[in-house]
Length: 338
Image: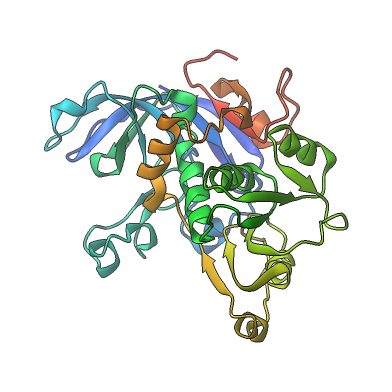
């Protein structure tokens, strides 16, 4: 089968690789759609910390935001899974440690991450093998594009929920990228007044086109924010989030900077602020699917273009894709030529 393989920083090509087989407890999925995210780009550039910590190494098959149809099942798997449209959890815990047994497999110390960590191949290929325990079935109202947006949506839903928003609350989201915009959509669905802060005119204009108030840091309105969610990769913004939030408010950290971020815990305590960190969509996947299926949130406008495997390298490199829209997300259809 064909797959996009990153062999070294800045090097990606489409290759013929062995088709996966469904091992015991696993299924093989025909991949319909895959999202490319910032984590994939960090692997492509060689900046991803997992490469330097020994959790990942080249060559790699990326792709952890995916949707597809189960084509084959392994021993011990209910045959009823065959032909179902599904998406899958990225985090695959060992299922035996204390964290996994408490339902926290997404922070298992020995976890694999599909297309990211532990040598588990990702979905930038025609087929993908994953444990059946990772699967979430997609209802008919969730098409492949929505299905591939469930994984980033699960992260965003968790961030919005961690902010503890009630109808009428005002929330500021730092960073109008994919996660920031998805978080804004879930916050709006919860009845909150949503503001976004960014720095590039195109990203701010796109956020406004979705109906959000968006501004640069100097133009931020002088209003109280009941919650601030940092969905950026800027090392100085976690401290700024703490400065901007109202006393007794909540700060949520879902963005990751390339260098350590510092906050003053005295300010955290004296303002009586609750701070929450979010890693992984795992606990939010089912609720995200339900929100998409019901039409409460529709993130499809975020997809700038859908292209074939041959364009993966260009997308990872940030090259101009002819005909792409203004959204921040690119999707790959492994069945598509070009």
